[in-house]
Amino acid sequence: MKRAFGYIRVSTVGQAEEGFSLDHQKASIKDYCKTRGLHLVNVYVDEGKSGRTVNRPEFQQMLKEIKEKGIDCVIIYKIDRFARNVTDFSRIWNEFKEKGINLISVLEGDLSNGSSLVPNIFASVAQWESEVNGQRTRDALMEKFKSGWQPTPPPTGYRSVGGEGERKYCEIDPYAGPIVKKMFELYSTGQYSMVTLQEWLKDKNIISKNGTIISFSRINNILNNPFYYGLIRWHGQEKLGKHTPLINKQLFDTCQYILEKHRHFLLRERKYDFLLRGFVYCTCGMRLVGDVSTIRSNKRKVYYYHCQKRYSPDCKQKYIQAKDLEEQVEGYIKEIEFTNDFIVQVQQQARDFLNTGRKNTQGMRQALINQRAGLESKRNKLEDLLIDESIDRDTYKRKHAEITQQINNLQTQIEEVEEEGKLDMPLIEETLFLTKDIYKTYKSAPDPLKRHYLRFFYEGFIVDNKVIVEAKPTPIFNALKTANMVRLRQVQLLR
Ligand SMILES: [Zn+2]
Picture 1 (spheres, helix red, strand yellow):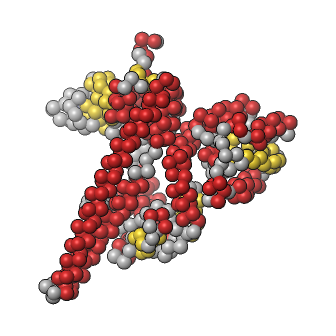
Picture 2 (picture 1 turned 180 degrees about the horizontal axis):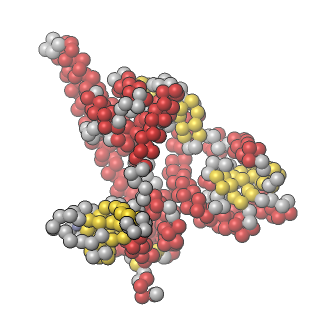
Picture 3 (picture 1 turned 90 degrees about the vertical axis):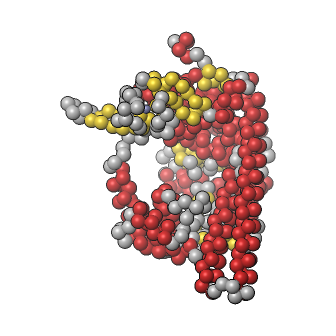
């Protein structure tokens, strides 16, 4: 039987009350060991207010005892409960690796595996960010979750009601609710495709906030959101919420089955995930798109990118093999370098960017609030018209429902803008620390993460005659370059 130590850190008084309590963490670690057949030898607890490793006596004690007690692994509850920041985390992680100790997080799994580390760091970077910026908000949201209400705005078919901000709860939207329910029922028959559902929703006047028709991905999100049968989720936990379910679990499960069937069908059509889709352009200005062809003689598949206007006489650009182009992009990533001296300035720069973003958010929020006020006065006028008997009851009802729906849409939009406004400084900051070894991190990252990095640095690449001739940096990358905070190494010369 493998032998384990548990380690828990309770960093602030607030946390102790808000679902990350000592008892909760301890019980979770015990549970974890029990179900995985691990012998939990001891649990160490630091209750220090400071997260710095040197100030954690119990942690130091644990390190000393690891060897003499013949320990195989250390179980923690969650990375961001455990370490103060990415630097701190990777130092401890390396220390454990050298000792041959597995580091396991109850919520995030085995962290010792190199390949899972990258996503974990990203996940926790996001955590730290929100922790720094909104511990209080987060505590309040957790409290809301624990009391049975979903902390985020409710999905289509529900509307927020009641108190202020976080304390708000939700109820079924009398207009959209029954329609969403009916949509589940229709889809469960297996006779409806996404296209027909989209049309159907359009007929029912369920549209997106921008006034466009509901996208396939939105429909998909609705169909596999367990909220509709009563479940709420928050930070890896789930429970039955207090809101009224629109559908029962049986109907939900049927829809999952149909979705799965449709998904299989779609998967057959696209296997290779073209990493650079949306990032690469032809000299004629069109996008390069991914494609595949099979060599007849040996049935080998060749993946390549080509101009969207491949068959047009205006563009004579050749195709380029996917691997070749992806390696060229890697070359660009390899050149990016930040220096320690500049990190401090980089942080300031990023902070300015965030502030601008926040200002924009505020402006956008105000504009939406004005729109809502406009609609509300329109609705008031409508009520006056009814009293004056200038319009009939049916017209009144129809118009009233229409305006109310628009107001509800705006409300959701306002809430979303407010959510976005909670953008976070530490995320950018920690990301920049990671960029010290950007090339290595990039190369070992799975494709979705690679795209994440690319998006941070580059808006696109222009390809001429199979070679990248221009890399278009993002505004933030540009600003950093201009300010001399990031530099491009001349990799070719070093070779
Ligand atoms: Zn072209």
